[in-house]
Length: 134
Length: 258
Image (cartoon, rainbow over all chains, first blue to last red; front, side, top):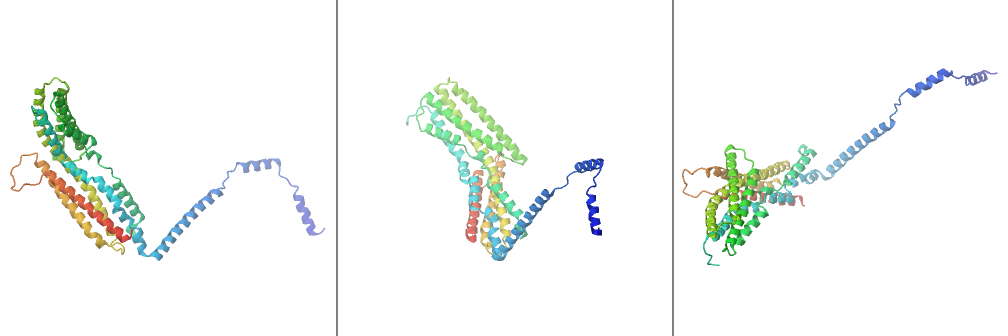
């Protein structure tokens, strides 16, 4: 028997070694009682979200850069002008001017004169003795 | 470029949006009920008013109109927010006057509905009411002027806010090659001047409100403008300012090729 064969035989004999019943029960209980700490799924999700944010930011900055290079400052003049357009927006101005109701206000200023005149005329009719003109 | 951050843009949109969605001041507009009540009075005036019943009906119609006028004035007056003591006092006095008018209308209506008045008594009642109505109308006009003076001050605040926002935005485009500030500046200056004039006129009207409640000490040779004329002139100035805003809007659209 060569040395090699001796070693193989020794190793095969090791297969027969079994733990005692007490040790097996203790080990099993220890393993089952320990908490599961694996959160691989969440990590993967976090990584994906962060990666998406980075990608989106990069894409936005890249687009802006391309636009600045391609269009120069005129791009900003035209596209950021909406702030001023909002203030001078014809529709908005018209709505605001209408809400101020200039014409109605001007006519209302004269309402009480008109009303007083009509009421006075009717009271004259009611208080007079004869209505011969009718 | 730092002024053109997204925060600025967002704020601009929010503030202007809020301004543009300002509710109409319906409390200040004359109601359809008042307009139709006046129309009824005009119609009755054009009909025959000879019998006791037609005279009573005519008086009741006048009472309906006067009551509506007073009720609307009460609502408008209470909506006015004045700060100075003398105007608060005047507002309170006007409010009491209006309440007393309602009481007078109630008593008059009771007498008319009672149906026991003879034709002669009813005619005398109408004659008394006419004299009373003349005094009533003078005071009602004062109250209306009070309301309109302070209502106009509110309109001025809205218009001036618009002017300020446009001025601030124009400054941001000082270095722009597309938006020519030099073209927008004259109408902006015109609008500012118009609003300045409107403010002066409105202030004069406010002062006159107090002056009319005390006996005049001396009379000027030339006729000074009435409160109504001052309010109307100021209102036209505010209108002029908006015309300038519209001019600017058209110019801006042209510059941007919209």
